[in-house]
Length: 481
Image 1: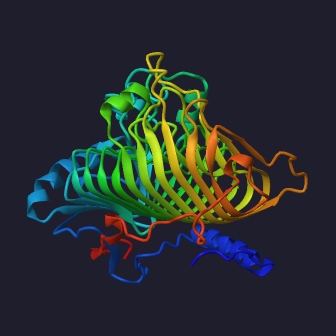
Image 2 (image 1 turned 30 degrees about the horizontal axis):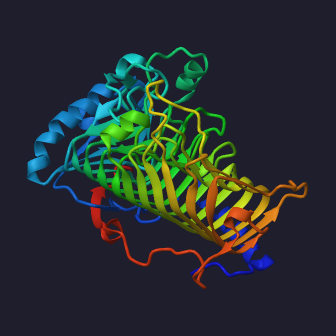
Image 3 (image 1 turned 90 degrees about the vertical axis):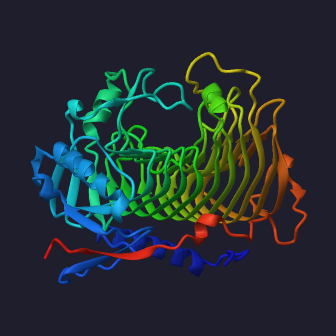
């Protein structure tokens, strides 16, 4: 249902109450899509596939005291359960307890299930984190030019993998890594919490993820990815703790997530400058819906800045952002190449924002000095509609690139309430072109041309293939009983 053109005070109050209710549900550990009565012998959970075989981490010598390392237990479990991939697959249950571990690799046709009373704790012993090569579409690590630590939960060239639970917790214990990063003591890049590469049919769902050393969830070079029902929490001043970063992925669905972050809640990527151009794998056919974000110094959803392989056909709807720097931000620069186009956004409720609309064409971050200054990005067909915002400092800052303007920007049915000490220049626009209708405060001159359709800016009516992927109901023993 589209937002009404003139929301009433009652409707805005109801939206605020809904957010408070959501926060309360999160604090109680409630996640939709599963059944977990504490007195039941079995748990039901949704997954892309169910497994024939089940094992428990304690079967491999796991000790859940929060002190003993379980790195070998996880690795031995993976080695054993990988042999069952051809016989209906396997699931590994992480039972109640605190399970300290370093990095471990997943296998295909596999489910990792984290019980609601279980905590996976990331080790702060760097010897338990092997080094891996830099990503080919980046050319170097994000923190340092050399290699990078493997992610806590890692997988490459996999098929049919589920990482889920009934709101169990994975704690990256990031303070150790953040402190060393601030002191510039790393010559390699910090680990991510979950990274899946070159894979197909991936599900990450119904978990609480806290305090990642850097990015939380990073699917890259993959397709057919479902991410849903995640609660992601990091201090708002923690460095580079992006929530979810779909990167050179095709056919991805992100939904029903609550994120508090020190960086962008979701950052859509596809490679960095000449390395991303050469690798040439876009992110496309991406759906993001029912997201709640708090990130005072970053975006609810960022497109870029690493977008050199291209970002196309992104659909974003039903977003709530509170005390967040901007809503859906586009970041790029000379030397990026690539494109961000065919982006469709609708139904956002925003409260206490620096910007509602923000596009940046001079994001000065490059892997090295070898980028091509003639590689200009194409930013085109960007559509926003049905937005209610309150307590906003600036309506928009839209900065294209001289000689390479951002074009076909459409903004319609937008109601922006300003802070008490509102800024005089509400729309700051350079090197952009587009259309608008029913926008308050009125937009800048480059967007003043009236939208042709009486319905406002477009939002596609067809469905992406990932929307039609149905989850099965799987069962596992409730190891709390």
